[in-house]
Length: 142
Image 1 (cartoon, one colour):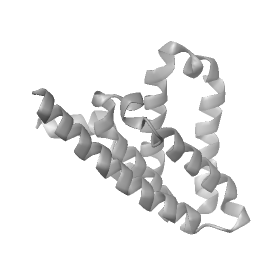
Image 2: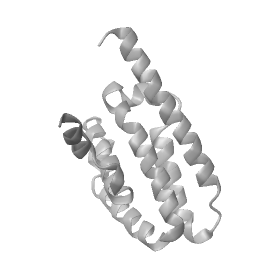
Image 3: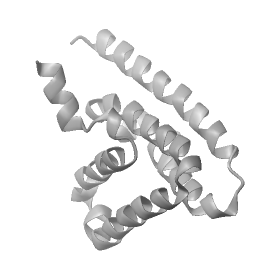
Image 4: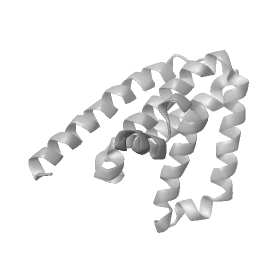
């Protein structure tokens, strides 16, 4: 892939992520019930870690293709949060337990892959219909 083609692809992917992130941010702002506060805070933290100034270079070209799926996973999670806040809390607690258990590894220079594995886990727990990276790659190769 030539430089111009790569740049165009990255720009298209990044703009799609930015548009979806803006929609998710608006959705987040619509939650006011205290009982969903921890879930909303967690989703906002996840979104901020994924989409922020410099996110394209922080994410890298290889991972950028998956970022829109991760943000779509947050959107789906918020849709389901209204229906089943207790289920969301249970799933969030599972993720937080894993994050605490592997905090040292995730904070290390070699922990970047672990961060992406956690994003894949979030998709598999909160938005199964979006499928994991591994499953998505399998489908595209057939």
